[in-house]
Image 1 (tube, helix red, strand yellow):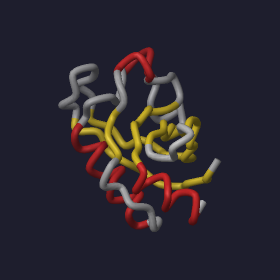
Image 2 (cartoon, helix red, strand yellow):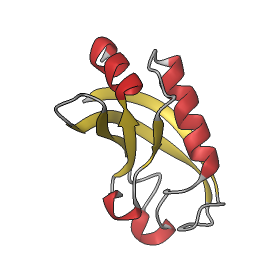
Image 3 (tube, rainbow, N blue to C red):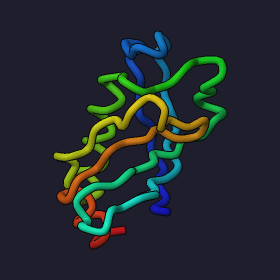
Image 4 (cartoon, rainbow, N blue to C red):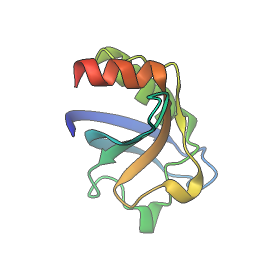
Length: 112
């Protein structure tokens, strides 16, 4: 797990939540990588005191959150060009699930 101390914001414009809020990000976890190293799942872990999925809904599809996540990843030295939300069923109670490709995986493995 790559520990992170950052705050990302939601715009309230996602399909699963209409809440605008600041969300404390605590870590990045590459939880799955295929054998070819060109596809994986990134779990963006958040503090559940700042975002409660049961009360606020899923962050999934919120465009501002994804834009700020990509900016954060880039600032940390990762290539975020192939990072996107994974499907709705992959989202967790304490993380946002993202699909990542070869560009992100290579830089994550080098820098994390």
